[in-house]
Length: 153
Image (cartoon, rainbow, N blue to C red):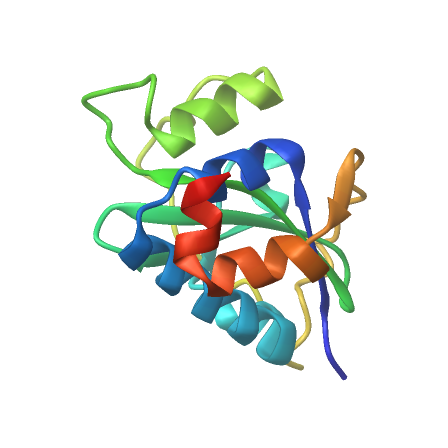
C-alpha cells in the first residue's frame, strides 16, 4: 500500500529553495517514502514527546528531512534543510527545536532508534497528528522531480 506524503508549507518553501542536485535527491526520497513508508527513513529522534515521534533521513551531505507519520499510510514532511550546528539560523535541528518550543536534548543517552517497529510500520510512538499540512502531490511533486521548474518559482 502506498503512503500518502504531505508537507508543511515551510517544508515546501525549503524544497523550492534547493539546488538541482538536492532537488533530485529529495524527489527520489519522496518516491521511496511513498513506496517504503517508514523504512525509507534512517532513524527516529530521541528526547521528550513530540521530538521522539519524528523520523529523519540524510539525503546527501548535510541535507536532512524531518518527517512525522500521521498514520502508517500518511507521512508529513515537516522540514528540509542542512544540519549545520555552526549556523543555528540554517540548522534544520535548531529550526525544529524552535518550532517545538524546546531546547536541544542533552545527555549521553541520545540514540537513533529505527523509525519502523518490528512489523515494518511506523513505531506506534511515532504517529503524530500534524496540522497545516498540504498534499505533496500534483504540481509540488512534479516540481520536485523537475528541478528547473522548482527553481523558477
